[in-house]
Image (cartoon, rainbow, N blue to C red; front, side, top):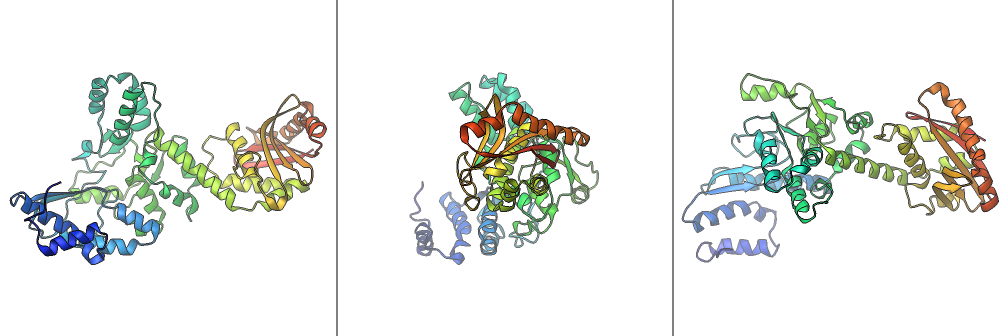
Length: 453
C-alpha cells in the first residue's frame, strides 16, 4: 500500500472515504476507475497508467441472474467511458471477459476498441498452456508420468488454431500432486464458474435434450454462433445460448474445424460466424460438470412434480398409465449413459423416491412410501421395491433392457418369473407381510413397457 497524502485533493479524499465506507451512490461509482488512474499517474511522477480489467462481464452476469441487469449496465457504461475514452492518465487498457464486446452494450462510449476473440489466431497461444509449455512444466515438476491425466481432464480448448490447457486447472492439480503424489484429478472449474447457463438450456423453452445426449456421448453438434450478444439477450434465441456455452468454455470446436478465410479480418470474422461451428465438450472435467448439472436438474424436476398420478397407477395396477408416465419422464431426461442398465436402475429408483435418501417418505399424500433399491430378498436382489406402510402394500419392479422392440413381451414374462423364481415375492410376503403387486418393466431406449403379474 502506498500513501495518498499529497497526491489527492480534498474532494478526491472524500470520494475515497465514501467508497471505503460503502456510502457512494451510483453516480459516485462511475468515477472510481478514472479517479484511480488519476492517483496512480501522479503518484508515479506523471507516468501513464496501464489499466487491466479482468472478467469485465461478470457484473452483468450477476445483474442478469439477480434482477439488476439494467442498473449495473448503466453504471458500467458510464464508468468505462470515463476511464477509457479521452483519459489523459492512461497509456492503454486491456479488458478480458467471456462475451465479445458488442456495439450495443456497455462499450457504446468507446472509440473503435481492438477486439480479439477466441476465433482469432494472432494471440491464440496466450489463452492457456500450449503442449510445449505443458511438456516443460511437467518435466520441471517431475510429473511427466501424469501427462495423460492432465490431457484427459484439462486439455482440449481450441483458441484460433491452437489447442491449449486450462491454466487454472493445471496449476491447481500440479500443486495438489506436489503435496500428494496420489492426488486424483478433480473438477476445479466448478469452484470458479456458475453452471446456471446449462440449467437455462434444460429448463427453458428450447428442446436441446438430444444435443446434450450427443455431447455427453462424446460427439459434436453443429450450431451457429452469435458473437455480438449480451446477457440480456441470452434466452431470446437458442443460438445465443449455444454462443454463451462456447464463449464461456463449456464447449469448444473440433480441432482444425475453423473455416479458412483469406480476406480482411472484419470480413473473416463476419464470414466465419455465418457458418455452423462444430462444438464438443473439451475434456473430462467439463463432461463431469455437465453430468452433475443434468442430475441436479432431474432431481429438481422430480421434486417439483407431485407424482400423484404415478403412484395412483402403481397401486391400481394400471400398467398403461404407469408405462406412459415413466416414458414421459424418460423423454425429458438426458440419458448420458447410452441406455445402460445402470442408467435405467438409477432412473427408476429416483423416479419413485424423488432421488431422496432411501427410507425417507416420498409422497405423504400416498401414505408412508419407502423405496428399496437393489435390496436382498430371497436368493437375489430385487431391482426396486416400493413399500406403502400405511396400506401394507408393496410393489416389486423388476426391469430388463431390450435391444429389440420385438422382444419386449417375452422379456416382461422373464422379469415377472424372476420375481417369483428367485424368491423376491415369497420373502416380502413371509418376512414383511405385504400384499404384493409385481411388475415386469422393460426399457427400450426412451420407451417403457410394463406387464403386471
